[in-house]
Every structure is written in C-alpha cells, then in structure tokens.
Image (cartoon, rainbow, N blue to C red):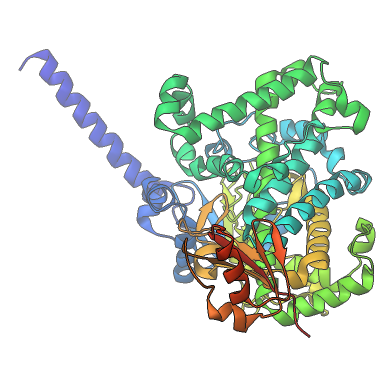
Length: 567
C-alpha cells in the first residue's frame, strides 16, 4: 500500500470519527442535549435550512408544531432553544443594562454585523444605538410631526386622484412609498419621493423586501453576499435585474452618506436635524464607527426596518377595518367627533387620545406581528431559569411574536380582528404581550416613529376616504394572511397586494365600433355622469350618449361611469 492511499484512508477514517463524535456530542453530550425537541433538528442545521430556505420561511410554523408536541421550551437546532411563554419575556429581554448579546450565527443574516441591528456585543451595541436613539424619542418624533404630515398629505392627494377615476390602488405599494419617504427624509433630509412616482413605484418596495427574503440563505451561507458582490455589473444586469437595482440603491446610500460625511450636504441642518448628520458630529463615536462602509450598512438597515413592518401593519389593518363594517362605522364616528374638519391636521398627542383608534392600532399590531422571526438573545454570564429548566450560560434562546400574539389564553379567537379586546380592563395585560418591537435593551429604536405613522396615517386615511374605500380583488388567504417568515411577515407568494377602489366608481371596457352601451349601465345609473376621454356628460341616458358619440365618429374604447351615491 503506497503512502497516498494510506493517507486517504486515514483521512476518511478521521472524518468518519469526527462525524460520529459530532452526532454523539450534539445528541447526548451537549449542554442542551436534555431539552426536548426533534432529534434531527438537534443534530443538524440542515433541518432549519429545509424549512426556511427550501420551503421559503416556514420554520416558525414547524417550531409551533414542536411546541404543541414537546411543550413550552424546545431545542430547534444544535445550539438554540425556543420558548413559547410570554411570562418569560422580561427575563430573556431585560430592560436593565445587563450583558445580553445577539447570537453571532444569526446576527449577520442581513449581510453584516456592522449595523446597529446586527451588532453582537452588548457594549458596542449600546454605544452605536446611543448615537442616534434620541432622534426616535417621543419628543423628537412629535417635533418632526410636520415632516410626517407633509408626506401623508401627498399620499392623500394621490389617493384622491385615483378614487376620482375609479382606478384600483395597491395600498401595499402606497404605504411602502409613504414609509420610505418618511424614513429617508428622517435619516438624510433627502426624501426619496416615491409617493410622486407612477403607481408608487412597486420596484422600490421590492428593493427593501428582497434582502429580507434572502436573509435565511445569508444566515446559512454568510459569505454568499461577498461572492455575489464580486460579479461584474454587466453580468448582474443581464441575469438579475432586481439585484442590479439593489446595487444601484446601494450606490444611492453611498452617495447620500458620503455627501454628509464630506460636509457637502448641510440641508439637514437647515431644514431639520437628521440621523446621519448626528452620527457624523457625535464626538463620542470613534472614527472607525463613522466609516463610510459602516454607515452605508446603517442606512440600509434603517430604511429597510422603517419601511417593511410599518407597511405591512398599515396594509393589514386597513384590510381588516374595511372587512368589518361595524368596526369601520365605530372608527369613523370617533374620528369625525375628534376631527370635525377632515382637511385640518390634528396633533399627534390628540390622536393618541382617541380610544377606538388606539384599539384598532393595537389589534393591527397584534395581527401583523412585526417581525415573526425569533429574536435570539445570549446571556453569556448567567444561567436562565424557565419553570423547572435551567438554561446554561451562553445558550442562544429565542421567542417569536407569532406564538405570543396567537395565544388563545391571552387573545381569544386570535384569527378574529377585534379592537374591543383593547378597550376593557385586560388592556394593559395584553399590551405586555405585544412583541412587534421586541423587548429589552435592543427594542426597536424606531417604535415611536412607527406609532406616529400608524396614528397619523390611519386617522387621516379613514377620516378622508373611509366611505370611499372598498376592497377590490383582495382575498385574505392569498393577499393578507402571513404565510412566510422572511424575518418580517410576508403573505402568500401569489399575493397581488391589497387593492382598494371607490365603490361609487366603476369601469366598463367596450369593443371598438360598438353601437350601444350595455343596457345594464342605463338601468344601474340612468342619471349618473359618464366620462369619456375627459369629457363629462350628465343627465342623459346611456343609449342616447352612445348614439351621439357614434354619430360623431368618436372612437369608443373606455368608459368611466361615475355614479353619485344615492340616499
């Protein structure tokens, strides 16, 4: 036997022994080997890979099945535990300054641990967060209410135009445009102006959504983005247009941050203070924390976080309110009482005091979940106690809003949208179980801004358009309910969005050369106003209009029937 054959055989034996030791260690010798759960999940990360990558963000529901089988604490991969008991929240996510870290394996699931969101260490995270957290305080948000209101006003103008023409509106894209405009103005004093773009620029929504879809793959293969970034631009443009646009968006962030770092953009100091001007001028941050690459990652994180969860919450809440006429009527009554003049903006403080609006928002938060991905924490210095279990120091432990918000013991009939559950004496108890913004020292820094957006947007939209909005081609199972965990919530991949239209306006397409309009139009609204190519003709029967137009040789392709509501 030659030496090369011997070395190969020894290598194979060594690999087999190493694999066998790994199996024995993970299943029987690991500090968490005695915790219940599926053996295959305890043995390998490929189990999670199958559900989150192959089955597209479905592991959170498999974890729920584990809890139903094994109890409130389960082992879900070789190193991590998961708890489904809201009473454990404050121990896992303490608000006091204890040494609590993120788990390094999942911290970089968005491509970097340089951003505050992905920072592993407790001390470094506290330093990074402190540099801009004051911009998201209640006082700062209220001071910048006019900035938010100005974008909501633009949204209302666009909605009014579409409502008047009867064109269906995809509110997912509309709300995404609003939240992107707000957060980019807030961060850079350089609004992206997506609200002014055609159809609210759906691809901008895709640009902030796509990194979330890739997050599970990046977590499993952390060097994937580094490899993808090595591909030449011409290749990316030819093979993946969306990824090409992601690169272009990255360059946009580079340009905005570089302009601020170079003191070439002082608009933020003139119009209002911004996050990145503050980061630049913070003497407590070392220069390494103000590097262009790190701040670009921070920009991407803030814009993505400030767009997606708020968009999904506003969309789902709008759907459920419109699907429940008694809820809509009660909300409209309180809004009309608090805001007699729909055209006059109301202070955020006053909006927060409208009881049923707050109840609707809380229920919208509950049913939209925020992030449903488990938020792991590591307590490196102390063991945690959960009931009769002792969790060893250094063990990653996570919890998910999906399990807490659907707990029937806290929220009876969890699939039902019911704002009244937030009106009674159990409101405060239930509020402690809301997990949209996380909890503890790493709680979402933008929660006050999000709450302001929810109150101002929903109050304005329903006060101005409540009776003019009707769901259109929207199905709960397909378009609304959460079907995928891409860190943030996502409906079915077949979802078309949340479409609304004016119920008193409908569109009829006609065959060119048609001699008469449908009799159904004449019988449905004989005195309605008929609009063709911008010409309004009222108080004439449909067949008379058609005759006149055809006699004039006018081309008939599209007709809008604007039917005034009847008493």
